Length: 103
Image (cartoon, rainbow, N blue to C red; front, side, top):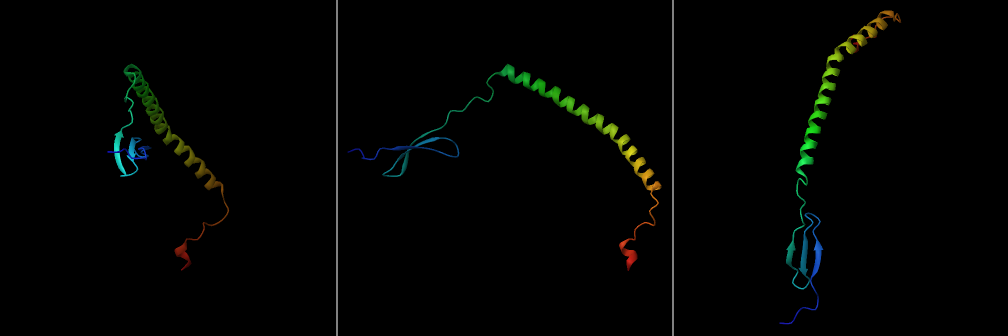
């Protein structure tokens, strides 16, 4: 058998990154080579330290959120008092008419 005149060419798969060797004459994949995968965790000790740091960071965020939740009632109370004081001082006239009063 004679070899084909057109040599096989390689194509990089856009989805998985695999290398495909394709015969142009028959349009068939001759060889498939998967990309090398990196290990999920390169350094186990560093990964454990990151997880410990994340736990402390999550705890700090929780503490701040909890403190803002507790102080939120005081803030709302102060805002309400200020708006009530403004409403009592405002003597601009009668309250605006409601839409169903116009019927």
